[in-house]
Amino acid sequence: MQVERKRPLFHTTPAYLAFSKYLYYTEAMNFTLFGYPKTGKTTLFNLLTGAKIEIKSYEDGKKDLNRRTCPVPDPRLEKIGVLYPEKKKIPVTVDFVDLAGIAYGEVKNSSYLSSLRLADGLTHIVRGFQNEQIPHPKGKVSPEEDILSMEEELLLADLTSIESRLEKLEKELQRSKTPEGEKEKELLETLRLHLEEGRGIREVELSPQEEKLISSFAFLSQKRLLHMVNVDETDIPLIENPDKFYPSNKKGVTIQAFCGNIEMEILELENEEKELFLGEYGLKELSAVKFLKASYDLLKVITFFTIGKDEVKAWTIPEDTTAVKAAGSIHTDIEKGFVRAEVILWEKLLEHDSFQTAREKAAVRLEGKDYIVQDGDIIYFRFTK
Image (cartoon, rainbow, N blue to C red; front, side, top):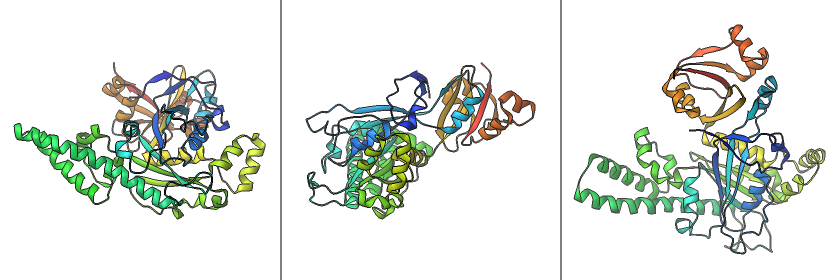
């Protein structure tokens, strides 16, 4: 359930400054940035959050995680808010966690394994740049090899978890067989075969009951995975064609590229100069904007809006969510007492200047609990207490 809570705003990047006067956010999605050492994880973390973490902070044995909570810039929320200047605008947020580099072959033994399992989405930062002062642990820079290596490590971490659980489950079933235990064993054995064949759990079609059965494992190869390749300045033209680094059509996996060094330089410039230098380097947009678009697509989530007594608020829900479940994302009481939803697309609301005027002109639709919420819907939920 999404809850309202106070959080400090850490951002200083221009994309987020428009939200700096708002102190309330809804419950955030979580993305964990991870990868092998010296790939640019903290550089990307700084680019995404506006933080200014010392890049070498992990080299002196630091183990604390870098964390930031970021409001998601949404022009639609800004435009809706103009109609209600007296109300607070409350954006959706994303939590970013930056892990220290994980040595090759050590994902399954990493002290950061629990952090990876807690993430909604995983962001793997991949080295694509040359630097003689920062030698690559394997002696050569190959984004594709590092991506394949990391994907294999995620599979092995899950395989280790499954084998451990099956060993315990076998003993439990010898003492007392139960239908639940037999179902779990059968499913885990099936997943083990998929992993041994080199396929992630995200590629397995699971029923809702099966999803629930394995949810506590938080399998890494089941999570949505975004590979971010940190490239040289000379490879900037490839940023718009990241598949050249690693062509993949795996379910739930996507790839992007960025040039960390150049973007850090651009962010130090004044706004007018930023646009000039973006064009000069052939960059269409900064990583933060591209990342947020990709993350929404990857997690298959959408945004709807509510207009309350004191605030205009954005909410994130999975695609194909029904109106009654969307109501539950706000509060379980609204879901339980759901009567119907009054719905209007945000663009239509702007045409009528207010929700009340839209109602009077019959522009607001009445929808039942099975209505599938669309991206950009503005919803007023009617419910009984």
